[in-house]
Image (cartoon, rainbow, N blue to C red; front, side):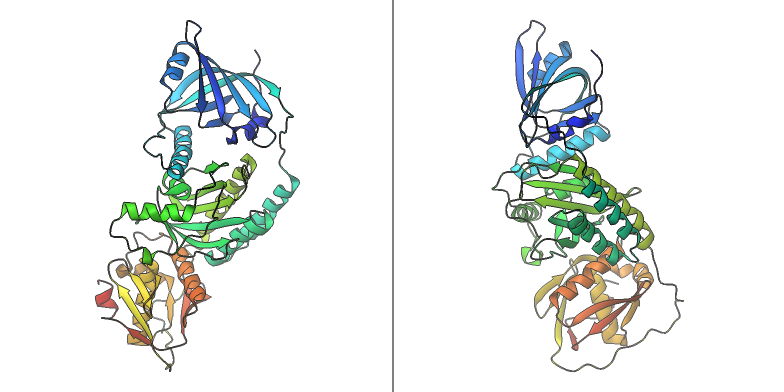
Length: 452
């Protein structure tokens, strides 16, 4: 048989309906199995997840011919593929991508101990035959291409990390039409990603955290591989699941210090795209929809292009330090009046509380505590990212560990709470602390409380 191009069939691999694989033993005895994941490899090859089916694997090892039935997720059209088994991969990009998707599915349905990928079985497609229903092979729409072009222009025009975050979310939400999306930045030292912005939700969720490996977002971060799931059960609620996973992983975790993650009550389609710059995980783009089969391969490709553009611009902007000399005098603030804001700091995780209400933690909390102490002792109101990078008290693991993203998080969290403390960017790598009320800092000042 002549080789065929299966590129037009990629929408059939989304899993709206189960795929069915038929194999036969050497004596002709048939065996039929349901496949969790069928992945497009190239125009002539597919990969099938090898999990449980010992009989299937025994059959193809002895008799490499197989038949695969695919069903289109929206039209119900069916395609019959004649396959020839080539090999099983247990490492490498293909295996890791399939492992990540399967881990995401397992994380959602609570079957992480059951859904384990043993290998990626690679098959050559020998023939394709449509066997039922109208063939709806979707072409990439002109609207999607136009939106992508406009999105890339906006990302390239961003002048700082905050503007880059806004441009990315605006591009996904308004230009590309994704109703619910969020952008999370990586905290490599703590193996977490934290939300720096979202679009389409009632609450922004800025500051919400997800552990590597928790849910689709966490698995995409850990594996650095995109995950797209197009059919979810209506009972799934992402935010509750993440909180349960947090609690299970750390018995000492205080959930009162966790900012709720925005999310749909019934999320039926999800797409998590890691953002990678060189060898570093920058963050994750996340899209979701209340509709089944909402994200196709084209959406995954578009998200990947946006993520790459974000990473390229982020590498330029995240190291955009101030150019002033270290000996330049730093402006001081004015005397404030009114009821003091009570600010408390927990040394354990750098949680900051304002009038006993939780605000933020981690490096962003340490940065805020440092600034407030410098203001209280020295009257300072202006700070630079250069001095923050050099301050060993803040616990930055390395020079480029998303400091700018943390400052964006701090700015937005303060603005969202509107408690009388603001952080304004006033120039390249320069920030001004703007206080509307005096401060009352609990405990000792920065040198003692930050552990210097």
